Length: 262
Image 1 (cartoon, rainbow, N blue to C red):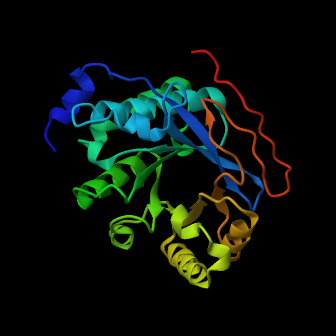
Image 2 (image 1 turned 135 degrees about the horizontal axis):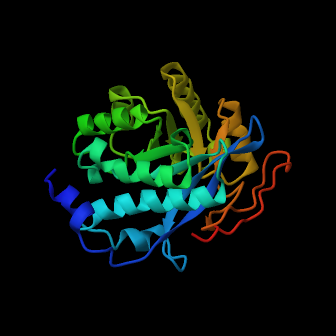
């Protein structure tokens, strides 16, 4: 990568578009509680992630990646401060010029709002072709040094999930929703998911199933030994707020909360 990445973060013009975050819960069904929230980028008027990402280009992707992290942490600090609840943030490995330098804004934002590093998890997707797998390994190593955890998103849908998992082990993998869809009626999907879960356990990696929409899917995935779930069965994302959450026993209900004023 060229050094324009760092220059783009430090000296570039402001982003020509606004954005915010929607929050979707991650549920630990073994404890029937909210384990964390994923911050999903949205337009300020609720436009989808596709609209926002369509504004990102080579000249502003470094600044956008940094701004997303800061915005997610600032909102999380207002919505669920001083708890053990995790915050999951998506990031673009190819938008990280130098891991130690590019993490500074994240560290400062966490310090400013009093958000523990151990609460923050960074997700990267295998759908984005890795320009340099060694570079991703350096990012993970640097993040773990600061107490952050990492997750491989969309596992099973991208370019080289197994190769990435062989090269380095994130703390968590998120099974792609296309692999999950119809799992209750598909013995083949059940076998694949059970094998992936066993493999991950042997590697010390936690498995999360995302995009879960039905009770039947939930039961099939539970049978495979998965405890962490995300999807419309539990809650849809809420714009700059925490949504009401439906859990296994309906015993957990998180009232939607508006972020506090800065």
